[in-house]
Length: 95
Image (tube, rainbow, N blue to C red; front, side, top):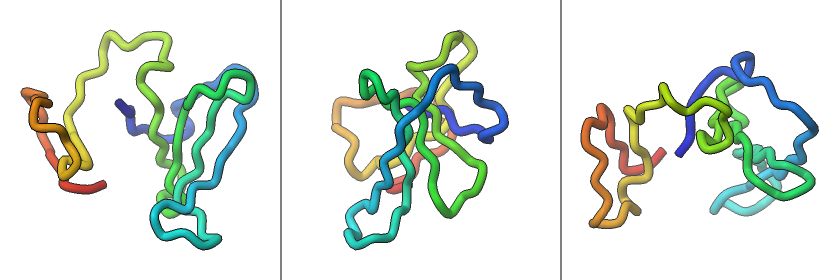
């Protein structure tokens, strides 16, 4: 689960390593930068190159998750039939 936010809202202790993901398109064009812990490899946050300042924080990495409620689900075209998330405001086939 990701929490979409502005990069100014995130404070990370420690250094993150970055992987430039070209997606299914291949080639040299990076579409997503994936930032992860350089020591253990845990994913922390991703940002789309074309949406400057908007990030997707891996919600499980947050110190306080008590106020998080999902409102959007994406990539529903690949969702398993047994997954049911009641109360979702927006469902998208893709991102």
